[in-house]
Length: 346
Image (cartoon, rainbow, N blue to C red):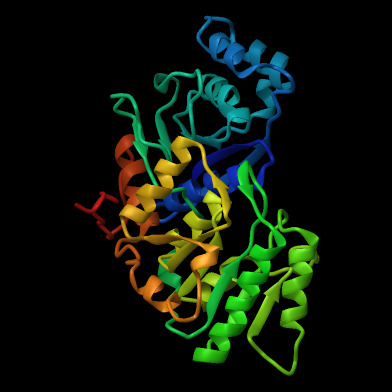
């Protein structure tokens, strides 16, 4: 379409939440010309349950937006759609949509808010309601997996760190480093490795040193997020058809799945997830999009059998999401791509 579709992303400043919103916006951009504005929102110390009550109290949304977020109506750019993710943005999404008269999309758990407060609600957990505008969906990414066609031998390794009930010991990092060397020695595969902001200093140094060994080139590239020039994860997805992600990060695992790679989710011995998050991981494994395995079980002898047990999705999730949004928001589709839903395998 010649007239751009204006999208406003409300963000709490957390990269993981922002990436979810950007992924939804990127899906919409597959079918129409878009322009995206971004606005950081912070609710301060206001409890979420109180904001959920205020959202349906009948009080003026402009006053509520000022009092809780310090935002005036004049600070909201005109838009055709509002997108956000993360609890911090829930009330801001509701009030901004009412003030601007725009449809809204939220990705995540609604907490005490109502599905009817939004036009479309997406999430990674099974929906425990019959609300017709709520859908379980793979965590979105701005990546278009159609751009990744590599079939090379390089393997990707994405390192996280401690989070919630997940704790790594130095032995876990050493076992992963040993897997890198063993696989190169046995099969000749080279690795592309990235740490993250959660990766312990000692673990990052272990893999940085491994990558620096000129006499033993098991590591083709090490992306160190501690440096300003660190390359994005997309460079690993573009170069590697097989990816190992440490199992602490649902976002990392989901992004690798979204990129239609063969994915292993590698867990340390101390690994406990909340029940809803475990259900999401089981759903991913149930689709054969990834394999969950303890770090201690990984070896060069079984690694490729594990990778071969996965089956990357044949559909482009970005196109599927675009079609879902178009249907729920009653948008005209301008894409020739018609994809079936991301339905669980029987």
